[in-house]
View (cartoon, rainbow, N blue to C red):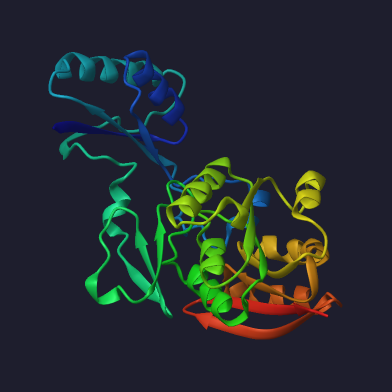
Length: 318
């Protein structure tokens, strides 16, 4: 099915009024495009490793909406133009120009799946659940993943770095804690590489659901994994459920500015001699994370891995 896509050229000042106008006309499938920061400056610090750079804020904005072929296009567009003109009495709606284009009907929620292809890390083949196993990879350790809306297909450099760490430091019978488990891919790989079990924590309930499903798809027994919803850095209930001094390996593929406070808390969950495998660290934050780890008297950095712009520190509890 083809849809008619319309772009209203307006201003950031008026974008909320423009979307409200559309809602009043029964149009709820709106998209706003501008260069306003999504986060406050304080919150943005936590995500600066992964947030894309935005162009300079020009004050301009675009509001995009869609109509099917059965809609009364001429009448709707006329009402929109009238509404934009009425706004000029109290706000600048910009040019108010409306561009019409034709677009294909797409499943935007699942459209990304066509770009997720099977790939290998060391002797491990990671493939989406909806594709067949390539004949040439039948001898590799198979991990099947459907991340849903959770972070973690395994293809990102930060996840690959953690997988390299798992292959080096997870031993048969290891107990593993995966902080910010996402799709559960790292904990699942750890178990497949011989770990006795993994405990995954995440602040996103959708991630916990995705990890649960992926653990089942990969044949893990319920005794081999445990998933906990919440923030292990600040939530005493999560800290208690995780347990004291009981893990041989802790995985933390998260943001640099989260790893820095995490390393103080996570030590008490590690056995003496256990390893902390960190990733998600852009090279601009390498020294800050390294300094934090070195200041922790219970941790010693034993390995540093690099891939592209990303860094992974492996530290050992004394």
